[in-house]
Image (cartoon, rainbow, N blue to C red; front, side, top):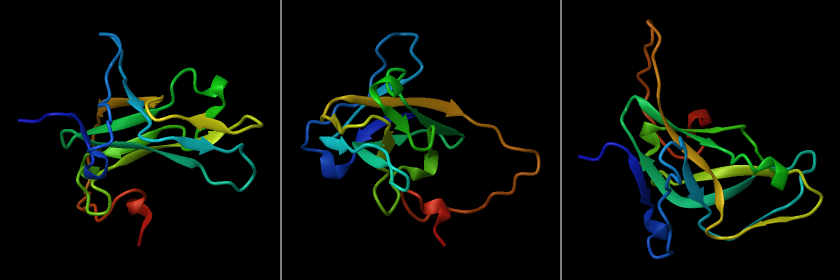
Amino acid sequence: MKVRGFEVVSSYVDKDIHLPVRKTMHAAGYDVEAAEDVVIPPFFLGCKPTLIPTGLKVYMQSDEYVMLVNRSSGPKKGLVMANSMGIIDSDYYENQDNEGHFYFQYYNILDHDIVIHKGDVIGQAIFQKYLLGDDDQATGKRKGGFGSTDKK
C-alpha cells in the first residue's frame, strides 16, 4: 500500500526525471529538481511569476498536504517564490486537468535573467498533517488542476 511519495507524470516519463530525495537523515524537505530549462526574467510591476515544471505528482494520505518552499539559498540567488510557499492538497493527485503535475512559481529580483537548468534543485517539498475545526463541513470535490479552487 502506497502511503506518501512522488511519481513522474506521464508526459515526462521518458525525460530522465529524478524523484525528490532528502539529502540528510534529519532534513525535513525533499529536494525537487527542474524538469526542463527555464529562463526567469527580472521582476517588473505587473509581471506574472515564472512557472518551473517539476515533471512530478505527489500522493499522500487524505489528512496531509505537501508544502513547497524555496531553498535557503534562493533569495540570495535572486529567486523569490510568488506565493511565499505553495500547498498541494491530497486531492490534487491524478486530477483530471493535469494528472497532479506540480510547479514552483518564482519571481527574479535581480537585474538580469536567471537560467534554471534541467536537474537544478529549485525548492523543497515537505509532507505535513493538518487539523480540522470543530464545525468543519467541507463537502466539495476537486474538479481540476492548478488554480482550480478559484475557478467558477
